[in-house]
Length: 250
Image (cartoon, rainbow, N blue to C red; front, side):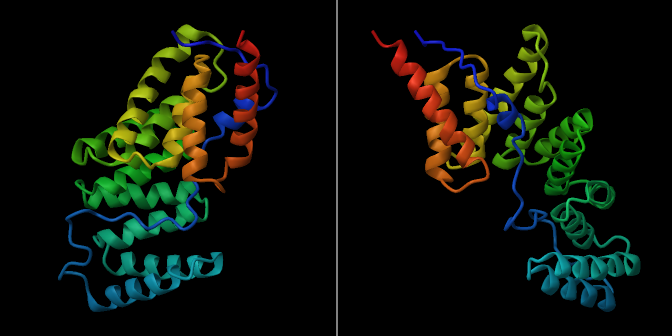
């Protein structure tokens, strides 16, 4: 039988509920089997796209803004340039401009309704704007196209987790967190080394006072991402859990 403990910490709930994906160094989403640049794209639009790729490859804010300008010119020349719309959306995401990212990604799925990664990126954008219903819908739409995206299952798990942040009544938060658990479990079945999925799974166990299980997941997160965004706060929480469990021993 699982031991249950209730840690009285001042900041653990806050740290847990702030779980976000760090996009630094993240590769741009791709369109799966869809052609990246088809033969209908005019040469001048392709040139703008190539210049955008060069600028975006630098990785700093100034070059990202330059890349965005090239992409905007590319889609103005050829409005059905799917890869340019997608790159434009993810470039705005990298700058934290969620409303502009939303516009570009919505255009992407309008032009390419089977572009699963565009749905996944749009789901992240809606999540950052706390538009939980829209995030859930587009993520489910994307997963209906591509079921084996571990990161998309994790994003959906975060939607279910974050939309009940701060809700005190268990009957109100439990159904959403049960969905979150199923999604994060699926994410880890697809990619056992997805560090943030272990962190969220630990949070879910911690929420229902399953301390030993939470401890295991937190330690997995630290093993996989020892210098991660939440590594410091997770180590603090791990030590508190270990101390509380040790105090329970006879």
